[in-house]
Amino acid sequence: MDTSLKPVARNAEETLDPEDWASVQTLSHQVIDDAVGYLRNVRERPVWQDMPGEVRASFDAPLPQSPAPLADVYREVTDTVMSYPMGNIHPRFWSWYMGASNFTGALGDFLAAIQGSNLGGGNHAAALMDQQVVNWCKEMLGLPASASGTLVSGGSMANIIGLTVARNAKAGIDVREYGVAAMEKPLRFYGSDQLHSCHRKAMEALGLGNRALRRIGTDDELRIDLSALRAAIAEDRAAGFQPACVIGTAGTVNTGAFDDLQGLATLAAEEGLWFHVDGCIGALIAIAPENRWRVAGIERADSVALDPHKWLHAPFEVGCALVRDAAAHRETFAVTPEYLEMTSRGLASANWLHEYGLQTSRGFRALKVWMSLKEHGVQKFGRLIDQNIRQGHYLNSLVEAEPLLELVATTNINIVCYRYRPEGFSGERLKALNTEIMLRLQEEGTASISDTTVHGEHCLRVAINNHRTRQGDLDLLIRETLRLGAEIASRS
Image (cartoon, rainbow, N blue to C red; front, side):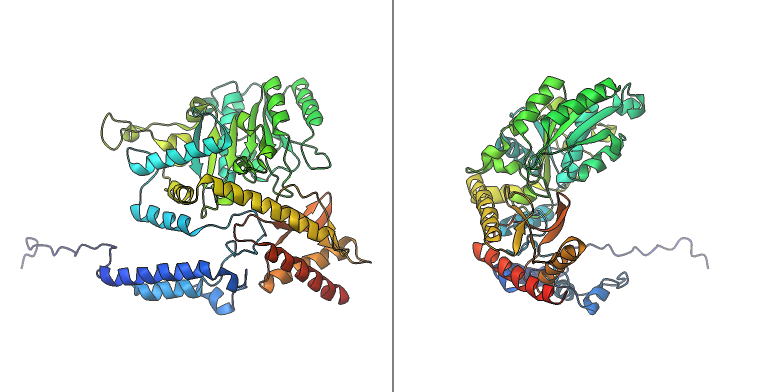
């Protein structure tokens, strides 16, 4: 029988939407209730705890081939991911400079995901809010309204955006068309020897190479030496290089040191250099009433990198790059293919936000920042910054009051570098002792701190970038440091 003319059975069309919206709604209410409890009771949990073997093994499970009830999926998430977090929302998490998130921002992330907009650009509300949050960042730092900006994943990418514009502006050729090999003179960038490692990555990604970034020595307070910087610029010019950009640091990651931004702005103007500020640690101190003097001069920068997921406590991730010259910013990244041309009406009748960075597809990062700022107001965030800085100096005083503890670096803002130093311990033995203190604090769930090296000396590092921290938490840290130090030293 000829079957060629028989009708072909059509496959049933599918969707990812639930078949039973009512049950999903019930579970969603449970998720919200659990989330509220998760934050409300955060102090009752360890800061961090290691995962048991069975939990770790669960992440080796094979790719799921068939469906599972959503309630079971959620239960697995609560038993694994939610139970064993990094810990940075906990009031005694001080390991790295991260911010502690906030519930309203988390709701913003949820709503952004529900709305699902792609922030590559276009004529829609999310794109306007994205630009509004950038404008608010400019206002907070004192940059002109005519400046440009873009929201990115975080500080590393924000720095790369600013430095890319700097490279193109100072290349002397159309570097987008001809590449860095066509430059007549190799470019030189300058920053202190305390620069964040993302600047090396930027030099490598920009095709300039690590050696294009000259690290300038610092003074006793770990601020860039302006005289040494000026001498390095003159030396490079004489050697046939093209000085292009100076990077000022508003809060180093190691100790929270601040370069003289006013002095750097003046020097950059005199030397004809681009002035970029890495403000991922401290740029937002500009909104803090008691401490904004520390960033005087940031408003003179040609570009600034900052991190709303730090002192604005937005949920991860969101950074911001600001560029004074909006035209230079757009000219560095804009590409307009035929399928993304602007129209006079409709969805494409607005700016394409992807023309200011590397991503064409962009998440709706602005909503979590916008909602938190609307709820609390910028003045409260400024007070919280001042609060963390006061807490840093309070911890500094606790260290100074204890004979067995030693400060290793000046406390500038909210980063305290200290160590437990009993008699008879030095060198690698002292490092091993303090490393064990750090690990025991983490493993016992008491506090999460990190370690580093300052002026060649190993030390413990406490970065208080947390709106939940209280003075009593710092008292506990010192008591536990002394207890663990004595216990470990007695067995060493």
